[in-house]
Image (cartoon, rainbow, N blue to C red):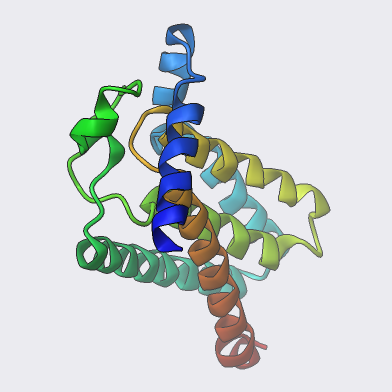
Length: 186
């Protein structure tokens, strides 16, 4: 069964990656980096400080930072334990795909997916009562993870598992914040 899933993952990756066209390469290469998203991060921080007391806002941001460090740590541990080569580093696949970036670290699971989905989910869980349209921020992680397949550096399961891990991590940290930290702030 695992072999069948991995074959599907490989075939789906090759198909999706080959949908790319050269004139979109600059867009997807830009989308995959963090700096272009800094205005979104700043807007979300401003919203947090506008909608919560200073003390609560600082606590939310600190919880978010601890979550980011935790997600990054677990992601790197799993990558090193699983040690799945990236598609761009696999000779048999490399000849069949478009490779725009060449990272050499392991592939499973996507740190970009885990971090972007954890950040956005945590922010949405905190702001959804005050700013319903904040869910539109999920455009960022969706574009972010699609860029990883386009650039030839992650399989679909890498980004899917990373996204799921990110959402679950955010939910866990949100619940920890609500039950362990928030009661002491009020």
